[in-house]
Image 1 (spheres, rainbow, N blue to C red):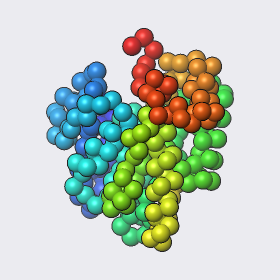
Image 2 (image 1 turned 90 degrees about the vertical axis):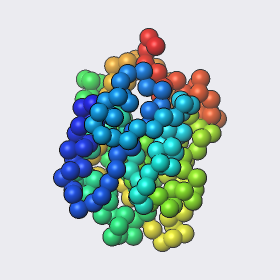
Image 3 (image 1 turned 135 degrees about the vertical axis):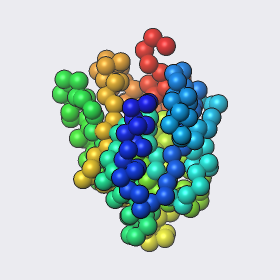
Image 4 (image 1 turned 30 degrees about the vertical axis):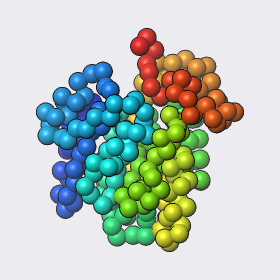
Amino acid sequence: MGEILDLLLIEIKKIPEYQSEVIVVDNNSSDETALIAKSKGVRVVFEPINQISRARNLGAREARGQNLIFLDADTKISSELLKISINSLFFEEIGGGGAKVVFDSDQKQLFLGKIMPRLWFWISKTFKLAAGSFIFCRKEIFDQIGGFSEKLFAGEEILFSQQFKKECKKKGLKFLILEDYPVVTSSRKLVWFSSFQILIYIMIPIVFPLALRFRALCSFWYRRPGT
């Protein structure tokens, strides 16, 4: 967390023309996330219920700005992408969007490490679906649709993208997936889980979408093996 946060703060300083704040949502972290964030002067808020959508929604409620950027704790972002995202919200007919996501390592896995990220980007770009690791949007529209669904324990960014796009269309705005400056996210789950386990977790919500409403069936997103 410390390294990711340091890099984020450095990138933010590269665009001083914008005022910004960084909010870290502590969602029952078992490490020193909250202490590290506070030591760097970042505002920390606590969400007691361990759920991705609740954590994101709390961060949004606490935010004082008119635009929001959601970034996962294991994801790195460049100042170029930050600037493009903010400029599009301020100066273009853009309501929100996401970005291309790449792994920090393919872990020498052809299908899951190389092919799957490319396949997801094609799906993301084609159907305008933002990956949860990075989402930017206008707070007004976020509030209008009620944020991320707290009925879901995973896949909430897909439903969010669909609802957000509809609201953008009503307002004559676009939902954009950026690709010039990809965000880099951790590939640690390719190490934690076997290829078979990962494929099973991917297939469960496809075959049985209601599974996303049950935390026990979404453990892939909440635990690491051995915990």
